Image (tube, rainbow over all chains, first blue to last red; front, side):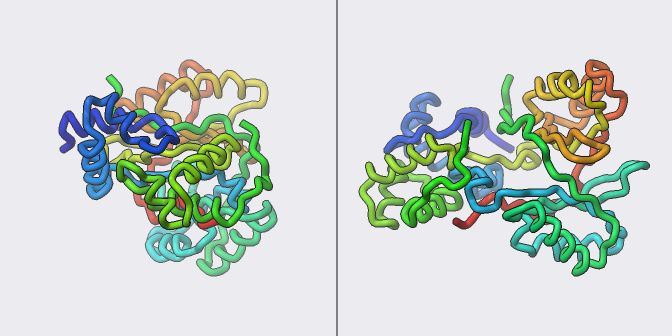
Length: 156
Length: 156
């Protein structure tokens, strides 16, 4: 369970860190904490898995991976463990989730694939399909980013 | 924000980015620690990071939380939205702070977004509201059963 202080720190960390020599000082002041207290709590939240990662988020387009595709796969239930593990091990796959399906949507495994071009994403999907022995899949290329933001937790 | 697909990143920029993506120092003077590793003074590192933010190479610097660990629930949603109703649908969906990513994708199911909520009841209620307000009768929800991989760092 999170203490009230930890929840307060989580709220305080939902803004972007200022790029200054002492970025934690500004956040600590807002929270009425010392810099040292704040950094100790942040490290604890990281150790306990509440914070998955702390640091800079780079725009993909600038990392040389200009194209991305979400690929939805229909994987037999008894192969999901093996196929999910195989795809997750691929360097070009950044996200791999097993998800629930619906009557008209049989796809139960999702991967985000990053490549230099759309054609490269298609090639990667094809190799993954061959390696995993999965024939039923759809590539979902994005035409527009409609929203990208970070969640605000514990807002009253 | 406009980003330059071929932003000029020198080796020092890349070294800094690699460090602050995956191991941002949680210490009072993080950029001094980064500077020691890349052979620059603290103020030079700060100036470079400020430039990288200004140029749009860095999207943000801060904490990325594990929503599940924080007790929240999340799902991937999709809908088939006729062209002439897209603007309205997006306006309805994007007003919820729990919608953190939303993309137009090339498929019959053409709008895909992620939704985070305090609990499953609230999540179901939000989906109901979205359907009522937008007039799109069916929003699919594909919650994750299992996460095989989340990799948000890009080695530069």
